Length: 502
Image 1 (cartoon, helix red, strand yellow):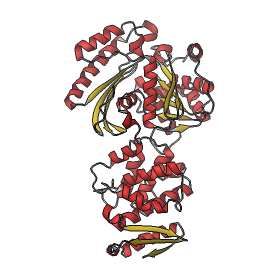
Image 2 (image 1 turned 90 degrees about the horizontal axis):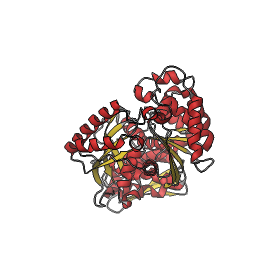
Image 3 (image 1 turned 90 degrees about the vertical axis):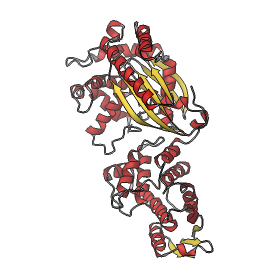
Image 4 (image 1 turned 30 degrees about the vertical axis):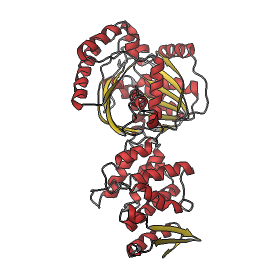
């Protein structure tokens, strides 16, 4: 169901009733961008007994009912614009699912009739595209009872297949036992299902991993390898590294995973199985790389709810506008700033192709005022951290680091950020220099205009034959003071240009 195309900004709730968890998330929408502002989950384990009894887990039903009753109350108290519901595999296959669905409806008024396997695959793919509109490859969504594989063609949803090979379907209730992990028996069951509905063979395309088990495995990998940027969205692994992680997870690392700090025991129990399934998929699909997606079914429900006109908007730029909302320093300044800096496009170094570089520079200009009210001694560092970890769509880790570094240098000439390890890992020295130069150009524009769009429209920067000139329209020459000259000189030095003020 799509929302009416009449508002950039609203709030909706999502109830995600999975085989392992029941989750309630409130999202704030701004155009094509949406941000979770409240997120609560209960690891009820509805599907934990599916392989042994064919029924929903009795304890899981009690916990799920309590959670759904609470979440309905919270949603009503929040006066949300809409509540979207996504119930998945456990409620599709359990013999007593219909009875539980009716009990929930009688108690809470919520209709938790599950989506089909095809619908789940489609919505999961939509969630991936919402977070990364450029996605191209195979999305793999692992839940407690099922695996969905979906082909993504440059941001468009292709063929999807649902397989009943989640951990509760294949391994049963003994996931946390300290004894032997019967990998060969589980591998055989998985291969039977995959062979029954073969997924189209593709080569050298990314494999996008979706689902809590794989996200947590990726988080463990970051900690084991001291990865300096603690963001799972768009975290990438080469196939060899992913296979090493997978085999460690269901092999020598299994007992470590079952007791891993900060991972709930019920979630930890699914990680070794997640490793086994990943190992099999790597052999079958031969991906070029593995990319972790924090977006899936929940985000797909939200994205599918959006009007088509919003889906066509740039989620990164809408997200940056939303992040800067309420900041008068940036209000109405982004577009004039881009226009002012446009003459420098051909002489400033690029890190990415022209289209992507332009997109990231536009994002930087949208965010240029987010340091409002912060102490000047810490402003650059705080803005850097905010952008590095902001919930922005359409960014891989290199792009995120580059954008954060541009904003950092728009406030300071210091070279060292609060996370130099991440910057040095993700960006080469040439790329760090490019961020410094564009950030310095932004700083020049801010100083010259006093953050006034009107003033910025009256001054012009003109690179000509190795000379960087700046001039003001008639009757506006007074804004070009020594402070502006100082900032122009800094930029000129970085790009080996002389300077001239007309």
